[in-house]
Image 1 (cartoon, one colour):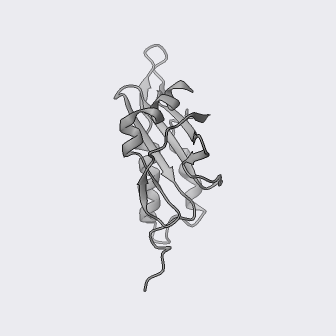
Image 2 (cartoon, one colour):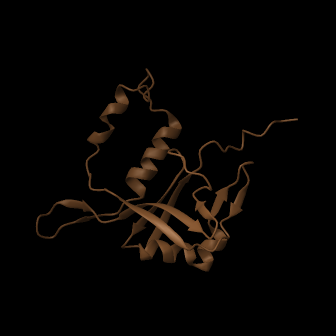
Image 3 (cartoon, helix red, strand yellow):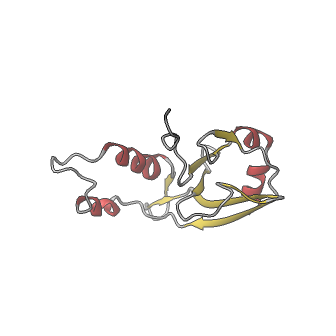
Length: 151
């Protein structure tokens, strides 16, 4: 995907996009990206019935309150990120954002979202065509600010 490659090669992105290193320190990407693997993520659901399973999976407390951080994450990913538009002919609401799962490589190999593949390490680009914004959702598995020993 040319867009993703151009995104990672942009000097502003290269100097401001950060990754977590093995010690939990945020560092700028800094690498010259030579290749990007892109996977289109289907994003067409405009109903909230996909959240029904949270009632039976322990995400909702007995009081009926939803666990705080989960709801913020769900709200961010499902409400704030994708843009929708009403089709003028059918009057149906449809998602117009493009979501891409990305892996970026430099001359040494994989460098983003991490130097090593893991199912739980990921980066997504959410492209909003109306605002002309790109949102990055990033997670690096096994790296935490709390993983350092306290002396």
